[in-house]
Image (cartoon, rainbow, N blue to C red; front, side, top):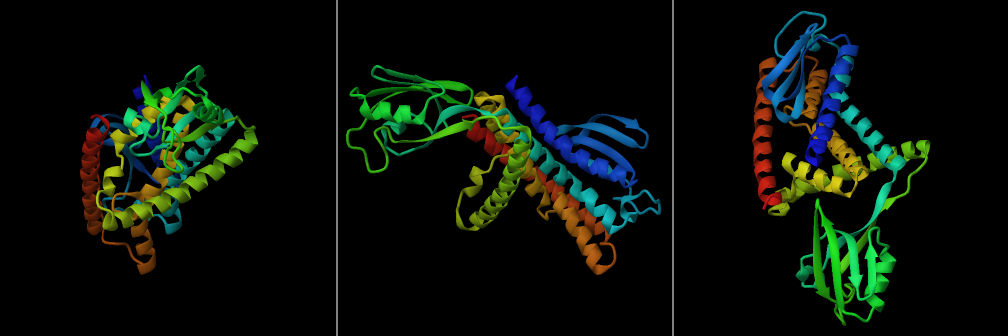
Length: 346
């Protein structure tokens, strides 16, 4: 059930993105030849009016094929015969819609509130927790220290006081890791290294109370904008890290990794799943604006070059570059997917 929910959520983000291109093209009186969910080969489709609505085999993506993109025509409803002012909004509409859906999802999260949990933020190396098998990201659902027994939601202060003041050295933690529950036993250290604590874990309280409707909308917009800036900065550091930090690409997650992480978020509660979907939607804004062939950013770049030079870029060149870019994206997707499978399904 969780897997179906995750796939449906990701499909929603793809649909919203492509629907943005589709709706803005229709509003500008452009002919849409095909509105496709997923990448070819085509599984099935239905033509309504002049538009073919299709479902394709590779589910992680989608496309809108506009009339006049690939062939010269004098038709007034062809994309290439529209003004710069009409074409630019159509190309940017997908990322605009992804930002809007990200904002709305964040707002729903603030309206709903998130269940409170005590999570492991980090685990010091060679600490009792690390030796026992506790990992960063684990959510503590039960903690037993002598006669002290705490259950989710656990207050951080109560947990820390229990570890510090209880004379019993044996500690048992039950944690939620993804969808699985694990129990670990460990012994407190009497003289831990400075800044680590008896167990060697850093704690983070997650969750918050629901907010009023209009306050949630404002908070959601701020969260979406903040996430956008953070993702841009992270992408910049990733690009720099490719040349300065060997192995940094091993930390990049692809479609399979996203499904796995979304499944983990769902285990904490539906609102955490919505929050992750919001982050993914804002991620799509940044990724699609990269000036790379076959992405929206690449097509916008060609449009800007055309505007500057005063004449269209060679159609054959644009099609060839976009074709190479699309092939490169598919190869990258396959490589990252293989990496995801080896990382998450050990």
